[in-house]
Length: 358
Ligand code: SF4
Ligand code: SF4
Image 1: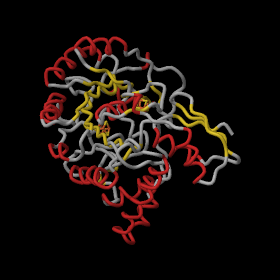
Image 2: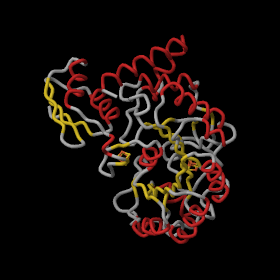
Image 3: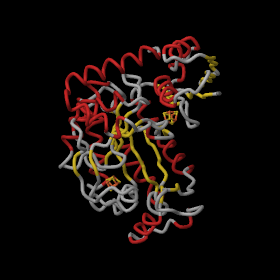
Image 4: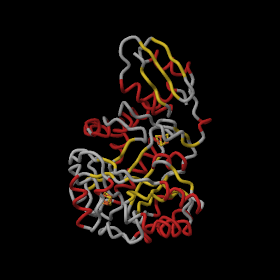
């Protein structure tokens, strides 16, 4: 889709949703989902607030989220509207990637139906590629939400000893396998890798998942703060030898852990190993992306970048200047300042980097 069409689609969907919402638009407009800038791998949608599961390595408590959970306050329609009016977000089939389940657990019983309503609203009104990450047994209704929807079954090892409030990893994997049988894309998400825990029986974990029908895997690095390290220690896990640099409660830092052995193990078994969760979303939807150095993901021939397309968009937005396309990236030089929202919107709609040379 051309950039101007993508922009018009966003405007039209926002207008339609505003008509359905009436006075409820104000709350949606003021919500962070209407303002937050996506990162390269998409925008995170919060289906709930907090999580009581208490995984030993979880970062959400360091971010200030509570150890209880309640549904996110927006209605599903309001959530879809908030995303549509977010100036950075592209909507539609090739729009901004949607990631749910990163700062809460979407399928705890008290929020599961609310979370499903969010996913359905995004699929129905916006159409963006959706991915959901879970440590629960994923509900079968996911098979009806969106063609290509990707479910990440998140595990760290087979014992589940660091996830006291979650179902046993094998139960999660089996529930994910049922979705695979129903045609849903389900990815094994080994995250975070806990040194001395995940790697000690990774071959068994990978084999169990492979035998259940999983064919894609993403390995994710542990990020720590002093309180995460202390919590892990109370579970008998010391990751201090893998931490470089000063620790702060305000900023999680990734540990230094070579994933090579796990990657080789998975490849030998027959898994497709993807570099990041967003890559699984792209692959599941049969799309492509070249927004970061880990890519390009998917088939880069599907990324259409055209000087005239970018030029038309910039002109319609009131800019004058030059555009240069260099392989899978775009450079623009405009008179005055290119608004960050316009630059990011172009990146999100094109899935390639857009650099402002001004
Ligand atoms: S289920 Fe997810 S959000 Fe909840 S504590 Fe575990 S890792 Fe954190
Ligand atoms: S290129 Fe791949 S890893 Fe990078 S943001 Fe895109 S999908 Fe994610």
